[in-house]
Length: 364
Ligand SMILES: *[C@@H]1O[C@H](CO)[C@@H](O)[C@H](O)[C@H]1NC(C)=O
Ligand SMILES: *[C@@H]1O[C@H](CO)[C@@H](O)[C@H](O)[C@H]1NC(C)=O
Ligand SMILES: *[C@@H]1O[C@H](CO)[C@@H](O)[C@H](O)[C@H]1NC(C)=O
Image 1 (spheres, protein in one colour):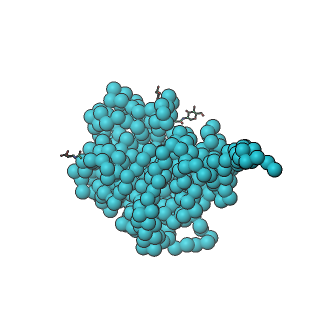
Image 2 (cartoon, helix red, strand yellow; image 1 turned 90 degrees about the horizontal axis):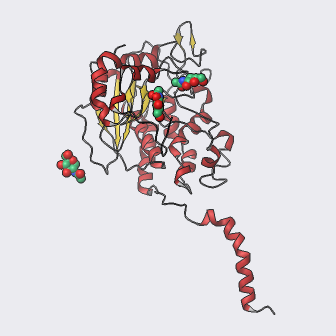
Image 3 (cartoon, helix red, strand yellow; image 1 turned 180 degrees about the horizontal axis):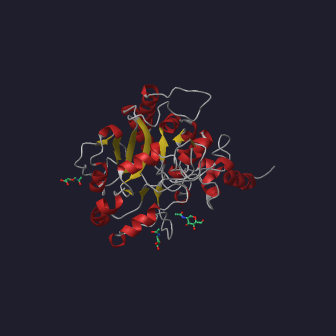
């Protein structure tokens, strides 16, 4: 007979590798994940379902799957929805007011998702519509939910919203509204990477501008951040992408995002490590590149400077750096005729930016 201590020791030893193997599945992810409450999740599902069923659905035509509406570029009813995702005051609201100044409201809508736990001064402009919002946390799935809430509200609110631009409180415009509008809806030459969307000087196809990168150095670590097989089988590693959460979507793709259930189920799972998570940088590029690879440009229209990045934050411009030359430099793009927006700027940049607004930024 084996003695009891021996059996105990033996089974303890045996259980060690098993524990080691199962640990990631049993132990709660670390550190400190912020779960999304079932109530919040239910609120979102109800909102998304409403947006899907009430929203103007483009007539589908199998021969032209990428034409998201049968409206020609001459149609005066196409609007841009500007979607601000913020957890502070909209520092550059006066600059944006100037951007929208004199623009007929039949060409745009503005929606704001602002973290309800912070005390935000609302811009003195009734065009900024604050949508029902929930708390957000950096590098967490709450940022995906907030963006989807913005898209769903904009889809529901106005069937004329045709492009959806996600911005933060640190974003600034680099051109006038009319330049921005022309670039998105009319210009046959704006997108330098695609000549097929244009024929005889006419835009045939509208694409989403989403950064989609497949060869980033930390991609594998980010892929397995929730467990080695957490993304499988639907999202194999070779389909996993990274990109900026500040993008410009067509209405068709805004609906794709709001309709999604499968990708969300994967990306809402907390990571084991905070520093390799950033679900908001993966969810949208992965979903859209898998759903409609030919309908997205793979680059963003929002310029950001990653040189000398600190703690996952991009370079942030200071007031003494704001100049005509900076604006011209930030516009330069290898992919399109120009970047349309830029980030990040410290709030104190407002004054120097206002100073060159009319003479430089909006002068086109
Ligand atoms: C929010 O801001 C208002 C006006 O600036 C101020 O009176 C109020 O005390 C603030 N509340 C909190 C919780 O900070
Ligand atoms: C990007 O940031 C670096 C500092 O990290 C700065 O030297 C450089 O001029 C910036 N680039 C642009 C285009 O502003
Ligand atoms: C454009 O491409 C060149 C060559 O790859 C690169 O040096 C430059 O930084 C790029 N410019 C921008 C604005 O990304």
